[in-house]
Length: 438
Image (tube, rainbow, N blue to C red; front, side, top):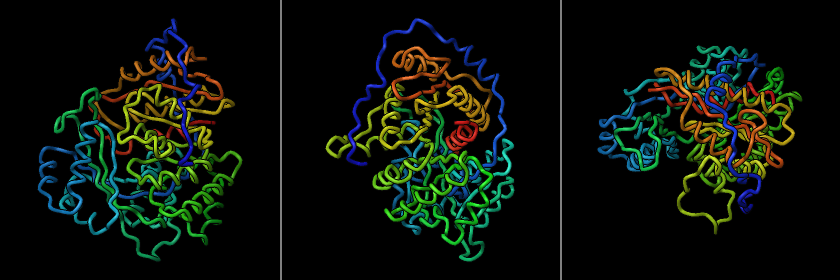
């Protein structure tokens, strides 16, 4: 996979100016007409932890500057880079003792909430009325399991009490523009930077003795939102995880599986995700950073440049098509500030239903962000118009057919003066996935 060459796709090509214009009110009407559909039982896995959410202030930056612990300079540098680009980021700390030393000064700071993609998705979906929601979390600690149960989620740890598992608490630095000025040509927005301990691979793999009972328990489920693959290290672990994902997919003909991506994973890990995990999934979810990193991983070594260039919306569509072609994934869900899109197979039976799932998810995500009311994103409308200029006239709002792919593209609702950023990508991806009848 790493040696695959990604050409500039012929699918996404300019067809000249399009005279027709879909007004913003069309999108407003579509958003207002969407209701949360009934959703079948869902299973999520495999990473759930506790998040310590810390608002970044000048005092927090100063405390990092004065922190004399191995790795603190890296945290400060990458945090400032995220703040400058107003983009999400994550740093994995491999040494548990180093992570403990780094996190100790913040032990009394911030607020605690459920974390991890599986944990966030599970509690959110339950809040939307999905029943039941099962969360497979091998090795989760008692505090994490308690948070899941309090939210009405069924946590499955497979070996309760046998190894006295400890809770993993991650540091989530939420920031707004100000303490570090945004770089030129960056849209100022709130975001977050996560500092995580590197979990053991056993937190992503179901023990062999429990696999068959687990598959029987999730047989009523029709959607599996899977994550945590960034914690696998060896090819054997990835092969085992891929085999389990394939078995999860096989519990029912209507079961669909989704792998959610993260930033900050080791390039070798990303290469093995491309090789083993994506091809056995029906869907993947990622943001602009993650898409760029996976595309970079697919490129021949001699074509890799030192810095990822900024991408236009049309570039992102092109790259998502290339990723789908390279891995065979039937559904690629891309999300960034202002717009979301799907790349589907040409035979997708109901693109309108997939678009409506994105609309429902966008509204749910804006609600979860809090803030002072929701508006249609101006940046998203501009991105939509720019993509229309490349893909050509749509079949219906947001739906384009180009060669052997369907592209579903929407401008999003956003909340003004949002209250939170942590977990919004997981909320969005999980909602769009479970409500999409693809």
